[in-house]
Structures are given as structure tokens and as C-alpha cells.
Image (cartoon, rainbow, N blue to C red; front, top):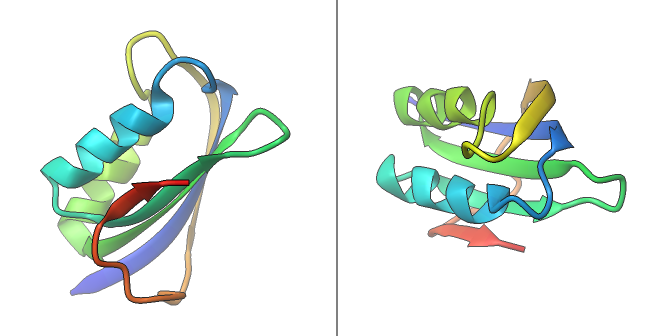
Length: 90
């Protein structure tokens, strides 16, 4: 079953290759969507795909790349806002 979630990660998550590492993880699990830096210093992402794969990427976001520090990790289920064909860094 396909699902779609939004994730907001705070901590030291900008300037540590978080978005690029998220894309690599999403591509590994064939998860589509996007991620971006927010002005408040957080990283936001939308993941869409098979439930097990999306959950694997969401789990990865709890720690991120080795040089990141994740302080909080918020996940919300959402209806798919668009038909994603890949994973993009915005």
C-alpha cells in the first residue's frame, strides 16, 4: 500500500549534507517526493511510496548523516499532494 508523509527535522541539519543524504536514502528505497531547507533552520521532506520503504526513510531521518544532530523529528500522514516521479532537493 502506498502512503505519503511529511517530516520536519530540527537540530544541526543544515550545512551537513542532510538533504543530499536524504535523497540518496530515498533513491535507495524507491521513495519519491522532495526535501528542502526551511528558514528556521529545519529540514522538511515529503515522502511518497510503498509503506515499508517510506517507513525506512522516515526511520533514517531520525539520525540523518553522521555529522548531523537531530533534536526533533515530526512525522504526519498526508494525502499525496501531487504525483511524484522521483525524489528532488528543492
